[in-house]
Image (cartoon, rainbow, N blue to C red; front, side):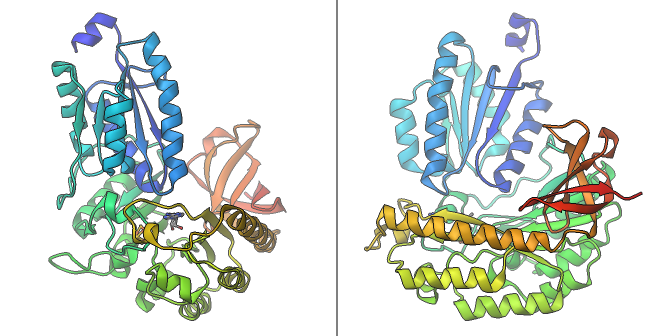
Length: 447
Ligand code: 5AD
Ligand code: SF4
């Protein structure tokens, strides 16, 4: 407040989000808190408060944050009153905190994944005490409901249904930085979605590291499929998406819930990670190649028009050419509409980091390029099959390059650009897919 009087204007904030949808949703909550206490959003880092919500799933995410921090330091030299804050997954790592303490002294506030609800308090502490504030919780069993949120899009929203992960895939740092699995109560989730619907939201994305194990640890257990059936009934919600599904927990009941639903989008993100049964065992994934392919077959039989997407890691320790060819084989057999491909990144503290036979960089790079080529060729072929169809599209924005076009998404998650106007944003429009450009389309609205 004093600062506001001094400057004669509202204080501004800028949040940069790294990483996944979970972080994007956390950032909306952080923006909600800041707005409630009187801050206004700024367009860029020339703001009174700059907050980086970080990711640490792969090392390149960390490196990007360190790189950007260098730039922030030079901004702060010109404007010493500027506040710099860091939060998110990277901050849950001790080695990162140590590095920030030693070498990034210009950072004012640091907090983690378990205490984002404390932002206002931490800011107050910083402004009244002057020293920098570092507050990291190792773990929590709490879920804080009713946090305000400033949505990026008025018509669609992420909804957390659970936090944390219990799977401990051997390469993954997430269980260490996001803690144990905690499900929100169904009544809290339903209430939030009803409110979102009243507020104009038509599409929701249910978020969790492993949505298929939702509800197992609640006092009154409920399955993910049951939750979906309840959400289906909420008036105003027209599209339901969810992320991420672990293949080991995907039940027959869930497949039926998808099949019978009018609102669940025909898109399933089903991370494969590797096609080699031997590597999958080393990864602690609890399924093998045959089981994964069996599951895909079952899903496709029940919901023939479903689009499948996936995550794949190349170069896990000990991966041989034969193992890699098994991955290529699954990619071919499944025919993904899209796949995120990652080079294995060693994360300190995970079991895989201690494994011998880390694969040489040039071998990994070669495999990665071959995989990417295959993934793109198959995705283009799958997308091509949609050409000529008329599909409902949720219009998300006016096209940044060409104002005469709007951009939206099909249920299957493909992007389409077509002639339209600002009034269409947030509406579901039938669009004829005229031309396939590999992973997106040009179309025309059908009225
Ligand atoms: N190296 C590379 N990719 C990883 N992922 C998770 N941990 C790692 C790692 N150490 C990928 C997985 C996961 C996605 C979110 O990130 O494919 O599904
Ligand atoms: Fe990481 Fe596996 Fe949990 Fe996904 S399921 S967050 S890959 S440990």
